[in-house]
Image (cartoon, rainbow, N blue to C red; front, side, top):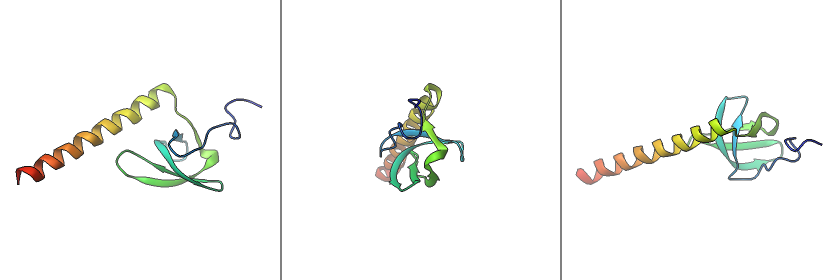
Length: 85
């Protein structure tokens, strides 16, 4: 059996994946049977089938890290605006 098969893949909470059905990167938040709940750094979450995900490649890993940095910058900007009021 191939190392990248669905049975061998680590579909655990916290695993970063690419969802082929939505064409988005996300992190596994929960698994219920054959369904996964994924979340992006922005807080957007969605459900997808376990057969629709695969582990990230290098480019997608960079993309997810950039999304997380962008979300941190947005959060800091909101906090600064609140403090300035």
